[in-house]
Image 1 (cartoon, one colour):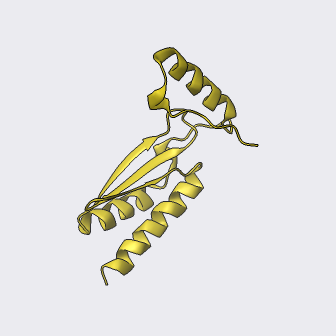
Image 2: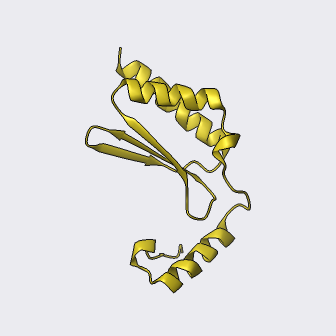
Length: 104
């Protein structure tokens, strides 16, 4: 059975540090870096979303094991957490295509 973890926001500072160590130990052993993602795909996603009046926020998870991608469109917010450059590129390509189809 999967273990239920408390949200980081509900932890004391000491518990927060311990939780980050626990999460890092559960990771695949690789860290995610945006420089590993194809720049052309990134630019395409930024262009498609911003042309539609939306915004993208880029980051990595606190343990460094996944990309953090947040799409803001009107009052909607969608978060994605791809775990590799390839899955990140797949997510961004799908998003770019969705926005291209949406504007037709």
